[in-house]
Amino acid sequence: VQLQASGGGLVQAGTSLRLSCAQSGSIFSISAVGWYRQAPGKQRELVATITRGSTNYADSVKGRFTISRDNAKNTVYLQMNSLKPEDTAVYYCRLVGRIGPGSSEYDYWGQGTQVTVSS
Image (cartoon, rainbow, N blue to C red; front, side):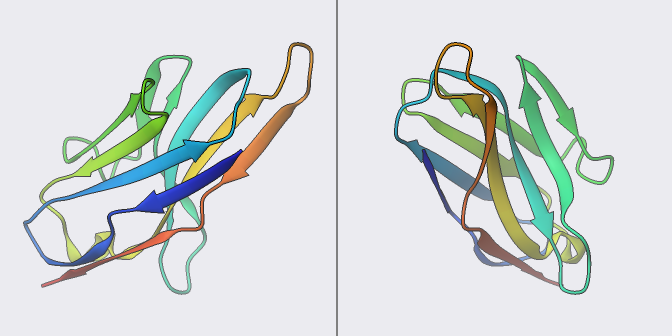
């Protein structure tokens, strides 16, 4: 399984971006998908996840960001509205799942896409 993140860029504060994370390769079942971000000099942090159908957001993005998954396209999206300079970071997508019945869970990460928000 490979994850390809895209959609980042340089935008002004108050505007929107949509990140995409395309999954290639087969997987038996998915436990969770999500987006994380890492700003310079900071630890990677959770932005939004979907775990067994339930969504979870960091407090800092609630009401502004929306995570969704298109199962037909094997793609996870992160719609980011009302962007702020503090949203500037490299954004990573993540998938946790099993490759077969009874297998262990595997943790996959995309390569990251840079989001820069100017004031």
